[in-house]
Image (cartoon, rainbow, N blue to C red; front, side, top):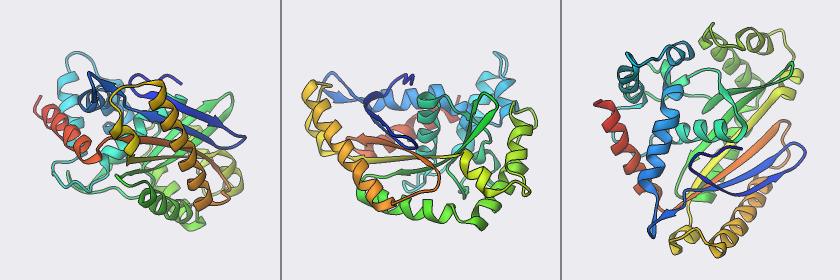
Length: 279
């Protein structure tokens, strides 16, 4: 794992599942809101918002225009209930944690600048030897952990139904960029003639949940005491998540990102987005 900004507090790996607990940390006795936004946009906006061929063609003559285009694709509204920032966070975290590659940029295919895109919140792949893992992500960029768990468990259960998956695979295949390096292999995996039994063996679901944490609020430095208390909270929340989800026929990686104040982080991200939209 190669996290450029976030601090790894806990990593627990089992045979099929894992827990990754992360935090934004502090600087000069304050939680790092501005730095969080800068990391997320500077490192991850372009390949989140642009399709593969556009992202790969960026050079010094097109960089500013592409940055502006990517920022404007996300959304042009201040509705705090929108989920694009959560999807961007999921996108960045799984790339840095497991070196995933985005297969499609679903947000690129919105019908309008303020439309939402239904389906999984991320579609990435991991290539291992001759095998291809399909990462279908779910994220809840919330301020309350228990609400986030309740909502995401329902979505996971719904999204693993046969009819939903077949429709989603059709949509993914229709949006694949033919310059994507795993284009043919992924199309074959998601073909209607491929058994869901085979596809299930290749699926991973990264689940990212944020929440406002009292432990994050009461500290102002990345100390040993802070790390110990937060690790205990993350492990307890991991157990709660699995109690709610129960058994699952695919691999699930749980990412927990406790925040000091989700609303304040949203506003900081929005300010950063507006700057990039006006480059």
